[in-house]
Length: 142
Length: 142
DNA sequence: TGTATTTATATCGTTTACGATACAATTATA
DNA sequence: TATAATTGTATCGTAAACGATATAAATACA
Image 1 (cartoon, rainbow over the protein chains, first blue to last red):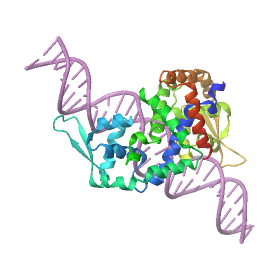
Image 2 (cartoon, each protein chain N blue to C red; image 1 turned 180 degrees about the vertical axis):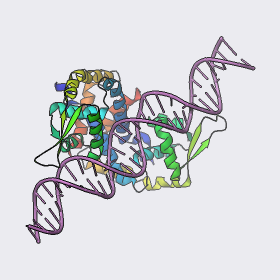
Image 3 (cartoon, rainbow over the protein chains, first blue to last red; image 1 turned 180 degrees about the horizontal axis):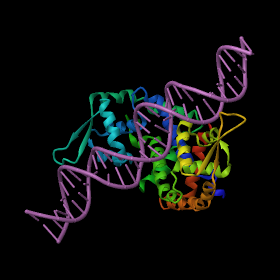
Image 4 (tube, each protein chain N blue to C red; image 1 turned 90 degrees about the horizontal axis):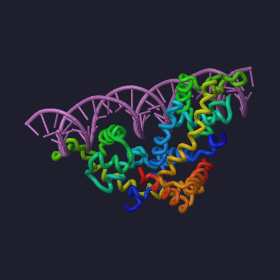
């Protein structure tokens, strides 16, 4: 069965590359003392602070059963606060603490640092953009 | 900071797409009663049976601290056997049981089933191949 | 108004991932 | 031949992921 060969799987490189890149992020994120998924939450909040958990799940395509404990860890680490909305008591709003806001300055170098790491790995910018474009097209249908 | 916007991240779509595709595999793999990483191990063993754990770690780019418990679960489920090599007692060889071998027949439809799922999501074959090629190029430098 | 449905979040259980560390078997080297 | 370094696997702890389920609040509707 030719199709069952690992080298013919389309999804395996995706799976392996995703893990690989998370590993490349790790040393960069150590300065911020956050994990990669936590960094994604910060990216969202730096763009728009004080939003409901629901909105974060939609942007990151993660379920609350992943985000709830993750956000609790971020709260324990003093990065965010949780406020239950008064208009609708079901909604929990997430906002950055001062510490969480200040972390953005430290994060400014990260995108370029990572880009450099990737360019050292034979990945050109055009190829990256093409991959990004195709995958975003796929995800837009989710 | 434009570069810190989620939409400008190259790695987020990779991360999200990888999780998304694993989710697409789930219903297909239910027939085999395996998870996606376990399916990857089966793909490796169907190609070459009776190989050391070390070789599986190299092919799947996973560490033994991930594979050891995963393989134990597969053993519990009767898919594989573990044999400690006599020439070198450090090496543990993994081989398929009859049940594990037979599962390959059931798996034959999976690659096409998944392809169909993806094609329903605006992903053409050329785009998939391009993504595969770029990511494999990246991983070849690991 | 009372009941059903939906919504937003949380909890539980299982399975990955993976850094750090341990450990026994093998190999290299002094 | 001791001892040091390496190798292959395992263990531990922590943090995702995610299906299934629970729960309280809000909304729809009979």
